[in-house]
Image 1 (cartoon, rainbow, N blue to C red):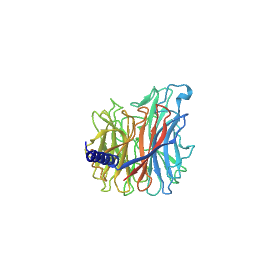
Image 2: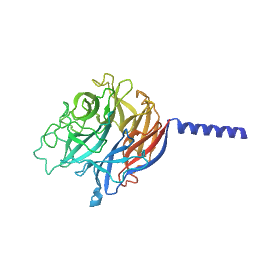
Image 3: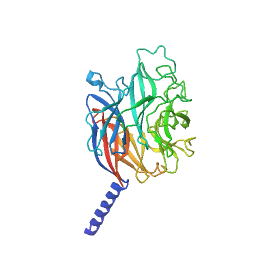
Image 4: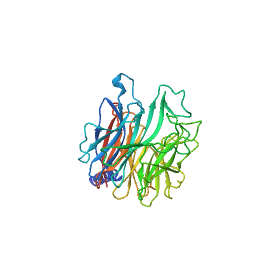
Length: 387
């Protein structure tokens, strides 16, 4: 083989490699730990960046039950509280001791989901579980995660001072499709894990899950709530995604520049397929849900400075990790957008729930919970550069 042919082959290989490295429009800068303590089981973060530059990460923290000699941990716990950590240097360092955001007086809390509104008000949605001595007198149907661990439904807390203090809890209404009752015997307050969205007109949009089948209360569909008072009260709008076989649950909302409302849906019974539903009439109705063509859950969408959308999601198949795609402004290329793999070193399926925030013109912080070698569950982050 001539020297000219060899040099041409090497040049082509270099060009192809460079294309593959940059084609996605993303480059990973680094991974790091935001919060970790072997005494605690830390999971399910969300993140915002305030007007003053401070980054606030919320997460659910419970005791690591192994410190008591128990065999493992569960995603519900009577001592599960909502916590926050802060960074005042654009994610370079984080407060070492988390602050308590909220501890529900009746049980353990789950999945704090932030929304930073245009005026600086912060909404955080969550939901809870009650740990009961017995369930003999409860109104049925109700949902148990473990024996005598009964669902309380959703609630919100609100901060008007940058996360220094929190008002609430404010309880959303029970929505018409929901058939379950709470641990208190009341119609179950609406709930979900997923990002709410503030529309151009200030209206809030929140996708909530509900069970509409008394014979199969584990099956859920997703519905839209709206709020015109920054999350203090909510009104039922319409179904987002329903199916007689598949379930839809943890869902994040997004409004496109043209005004479409897009719901990114986690599923069950569809081989972990990510799904999407769209409203073109301001949330009065949604078109048929569609598979997005890839596996992953749950999903969260962040608007980039150029109006493209960073979609992040967990990947609970080997190799376990975190993945992302960049969608166009109207989120119509979800089935062709290139997948970018952030991490593949997760120690088990107990990882994920990523949530991103823009740091500056070309960098994004992606937060998530993680474990290495099935060890301590912790809150981690990845910095991405985006072209």
